Image (cartoon, rainbow, N blue to C red; front, top):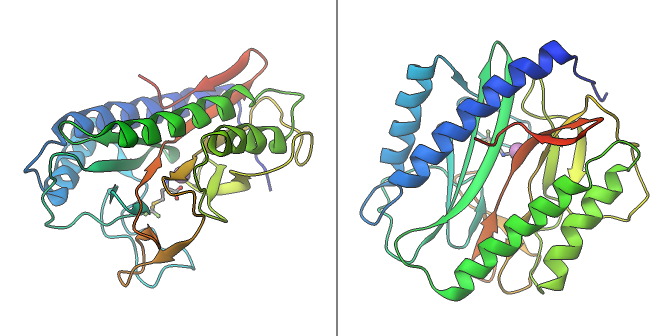
Length: 255
Ligand code: MF3
Ligand code: CO
């Protein structure tokens, strides 16, 4: 069931989105060579507590996962695409890191992800991240009343394919509200003019993922969460939670 949000609900979601954006920025700035993934997770936990918000990810236990999610950040390095669990790994100069973070205030969630380079990164890694970010922007631009869900999917897909990047099959975005994952599923591939008609009051997380080699193959690691490329090539991931309004898309997780 797709739930339309009231103006009062959107006001709360704006607050949650701002907290998500602030903590994503702080963790991005702290992501430097020599820092461990667990230290970044600790930082996010402290900031969450300071801001009076709660993690959307910690203890989250969807049916596909063997264990509840044990952290507040998903940290996916290089060939990890999404849902990497923070551990004692130290970041190296040249790593490509996706930071995914969700938080809720008064029961309303925000969900966003960025990809950042650790120290200087090579031009191919920068382009991978930039194209993924452009795919997100294209998807957001298509999130207007009168369009359909397939218009968002097609916009994302077009940018990724033009760059000859792979997209992990089956992964995509989702509705956001009193649950982090609500209907509808927002595919990253699809046909324009098809699917659910978009209406003001819908809140969606749009989250493209791209794989450098062009492969769409992915695998789940033994930790039960980390989704990685099969061929070892690198991936990027960007995400915003947006509200569809009569005045165009509003990014809730922007600063
Ligand atoms: N942005 C991620 C997603 O929508 C957040 C979920 S991570 C989890 O899949 F650990 F909480 F599952
Ligand atoms: Co999400």
